[in-house]
Length: 404
Image 1 (cartoon, rainbow, N blue to C red):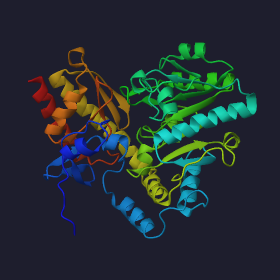
Image 2: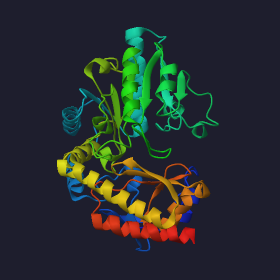
Image 3: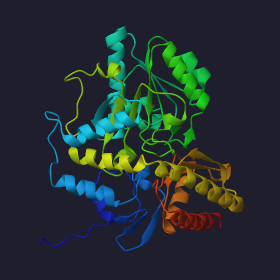
Image 4: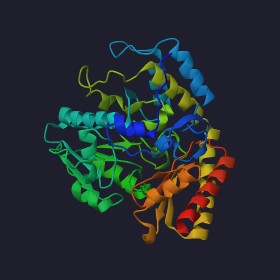
């Protein structure tokens, strides 16, 4: 066996492209909602790999599903179909509005497919003039050149120009602004049911329903980006189910694989026809390993007691977060749905969300930011309630460290 070279945080700076600034610790093992680093220090995980590890780390049913499939078939590409892919597609169709599924490897790829499909469908049915896409300021849809342009955050597009055209941004939750921008040249409106990366801001029911009506009036497709809100995160299997609307296209990733990379685009038969043979593809999309794990995720998350548990845990988190704020007065608002929560910081603390996350890490708790002014929590959907209590105690200690 070759002599093991030490693998520490300093190696990141030597060998990795510097587009990330990871924390100093390196996790080496996870179980449920806890992680251990190289030094054996234990952490409670309120971050969930950015809303990905929806069933925690090393869930036995996911491990068993992956292990069994790994001994059978890893990859065949899309010149052949495979059984796990077909089973997962059927399950998604049974559980949602969808009639047709396209598999990819990430949320960005799923959104890229959705946006391409929207333009192709409009071109097929209405001609080349109907190609404009409306998105929302401060939205986030991925890091490909197309999806990062559709996302409404200029900081992510600077230096990558020229950008794809035909994309308009309007304020989120502003139905009048959308009504003023939409026209018969609009092919699609894309929205997150909750703005995730920009502060955990839920869409109002009236805004979502009004957007659906505007899309219908102008024969535009409504795309729901449920990369972060899907797979049970909000207490519904998909957030649209609690909003009284049905999108034309929905994208799913993150929690769908429970930590194994997968993305999916869901749509109807009529719309799907516009992606004919050869019009779009991905080598790894529908990979048997990913689809096997995702099917196991849906089997577990789709259980009524799991979704009810998400709603119960939401109430417990809100209760504890409000109690913490009663002590320290650092938040202006605590918002979100299910287990996607945002703690917006008071003006005196704005710009310092990362400081809170760093202080939490020092106390043995993993949390996230959602922009510079909001702390984001996205734990496992099945995190034990005693770990919520223990994690909140650590969070309170971290806030006390900062306030002092």
